[in-house]
Image 1 (cartoon, rainbow, N blue to C red):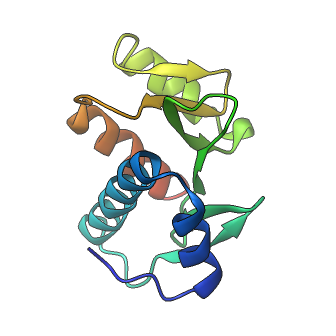
Image 2: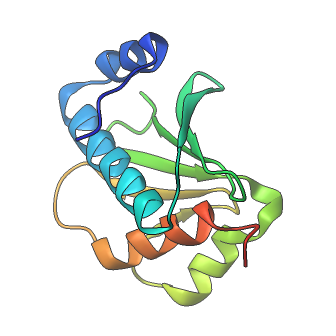
Length: 130
C-alpha cells in the first residue's frame, strides 16, 4: 500500500465509512499498481470535486467516491467526454453496473471482476498514449 502524502486526501479517506474506505483503498492500490505497470514515474494524487483523484501524465483522471444516497456501493468516475465508460461497457457488458457515461458503480461487499477492473484502470491511465 502506497502511503497517502496529501493530508487532504488522507482526511477524505478517513471520512468514508469503514466498508467504503476499505473498498476505495483497495481501488487506490490497484490504480498505483497499474500506474507502475504502465511505467509511470509519478502518479498525481489530489482532490477533485472533494474526492480522491488520480492521473498520470498522458492519461485521464480517475476519481473515487461514495455517496450517502447509495450506501451499499462505491464509484469510480471518469471524464465523460473521453468515451471510456462506453468502451468499458462494450468490453465488459455484464461485469459492472454503469452510471451513465461517467462511472463504474461497484458493490461494497463481494468479489469483483478484478482483471476487468484493472484493464479499465490501465486504459484510463494511458488514455492519451494510445
